[in-house]
Length: 325
Figure 1: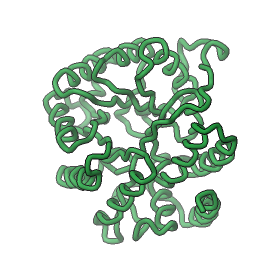
Figure 2: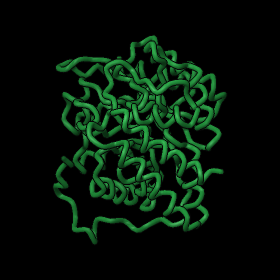
Figure 3: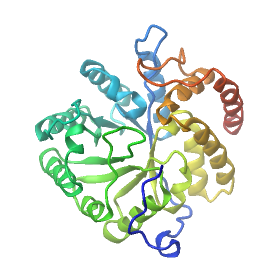
Figure 4: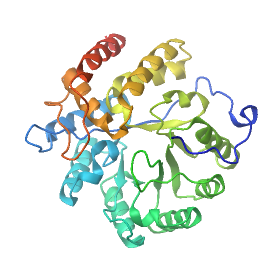
C-alpha cells in the first residue's frame, strides 16, 4: 500500500515541469554478490564497482541492495575498504549504518562514527535508517541529521518506506522542507514508491534550494528523472551501462530515451514485485546471466525468487544488451 498523499496539491499544481536535456546524476546501489557456500564474492563486487565507475555512475555500497542489514561489522568495513581501493579517488557513496535493535534509543555518537568511517574512506555517507532514528518524531529526525552535519560534514539523507525495511521513514512535507535547508545535506534518497510524494519534494527543492539532489529510489517509476529527480536506485545495479546510456540520451535530446527507459522499467516492474526485498535475487540472476558474477546466490536470510524467473531474466538480458552492442 502506498503512503497517503495527505496535504498534497491537485495534480495541475503538484507536477513540476519536465526538464528536457538535463544532465542526470546517477548513483547505483551495488549488489553484494555471494557464492554457493554463503561467502561474499569479493572479486564479483570489485568487478561490479568498476563497471559502475566505467559507466559514469557513482556506486553506492552498504545499502539495502548490498544486504547491509544482514552483514556483520567486519564485512561492512571490508566492503567499504574494497570500494575505496577500486575507486582510486572517484566519487562514491556508502551507507552510514547503525546496527541497533527495536526500541533502542537514538545514539548520535554511533551514527557520527559510521558517517566518519565513510568520509575517511573517501565516500559520502548516506544516513541509513536505524531503530534509534525511527523512535524520533519527524522534526527530531531532521534535527538529528542537522547535528550530524555539524559534526561530520556532508551527507545524504534517506527516506525509505516500510515496504523495504520496518524502521524506514517517509517525512511529512514540513519536515522535508527543513531537511532541504540543512547546508551539509547534499540531497536525499526518496523511496516511497509514490510519484505524488516525490513530485511534492521536487517542488520544495526548486523553491528552497535548487542544488539539492532529490534522488529517486522509485524502481517502479524510473522516469522521475524527466521531472528533475536524480537517482540512487537498486535497479541500476542490473545494468549500470544501460542506465548510463539512457541518461546520455536524455541529456542529448534523443527520443530513444523513452524506448530504453520503458525496457528498463519493464525489468524494474518484474524484479520489484512482492516481496520487494527479493529483487536482490533477481539482480543476482541477471548479473550471473550477463557473466558479471560467478553465481546467483544471495545472503542467508534474504528472500528468493522461483527458478521460473530465470526465463524472463534471460529474455530481458538479451533485449537490454541489444541496446549496448
